[in-house]
Length: 472
Image (cartoon, rainbow, N blue to C red):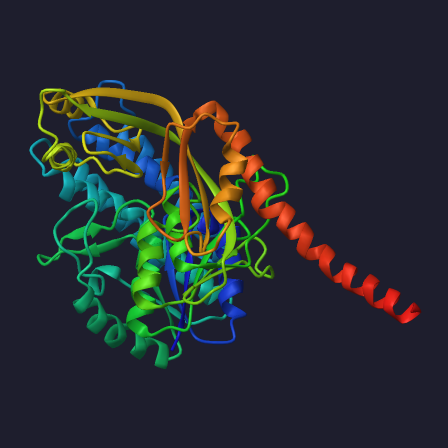
């Protein structure tokens, strides 16, 4: 079965990166399917247009015509640098114009449009443009390729902006659509991030959803591996900007990857990491700027030995502490709290509870005014905004004696607002945002660096002992 390769925004950002993509696929030993994101920054530009065209827009919003014209020229420039001669460019240039004409038509529909439906249709043009450029780049490298529209094979529900895939339909549609192209010797090139609902209207899987697309296709095909091509060498043991001694993790369990994706290591989309677990699918993260480097392999971690993998941190977090009024009954308190959060669509990252109080973290950019008002009806509410989460991720943290002691020894000098450990693969701390960088460095030193140094020194000790025995 073909291997699925997904290329992110920085890996398709202009003609040189598209040529590099084509060279990577040309050099593969097995058959390939390619999934692409929009060029770097394009989704942000389109999101701004969506906001400006709906109730979020204001008088200071940028001119959509100017933005679309600049995006059009950016993609045409890439085309002209990939393909020499007007004859080879004409059909793709016409397709680019067609995509932008449809975007202008969408924007001119005026008020009263359904925001979610409109937004997904406009957001999709970034990927629609890149598949066209990817095909011509592959052909220029002598690799036969064809566009396969994701709308034909990634069916979803109608939750615009965060559509849920119809897994059963995808399992049937993907092989019947992709394998005939592969058998003809073609490389199918598919848009990431987008799909279609039962009426045929474009949907999107949420920001970063191209990773999810790649794992959906790979699982349906029974691919040997998914390769996510990015601009980093793989998953790091900590943010290199904070920890100079951080390293690329050679392999990590799929459950660990899920935790890392949620708590700060944004290399793999959480939905993709979860799908790796569900489908038992190996996934490799590699650097398209240095394709010779091995990257990080994400795999099933069943039966793996206990080990620390990484220390992740997440800023822009708010901690909400809720305590029931003394006159309120403790019975049903937590249900009321999380009922409020559910009704307002506020997702929770970490949580700690007692019979009459709870504390939890949410993204700081969530609008909490209505939530706070609803909670205040039956409880005291305190919100801390200048906090961060620091999460230690590794295998066997519950089953291996002494692991928690090592973690808490590193944390003992840092004031902690909340501790959360609900699984065998992670333990998280909520601390002041200013304290987070030093805590990350301290945890990385004690849990990862010192252990690695000890392992490196062990063989030399064995050699020295052997020589001493020989002298005797």
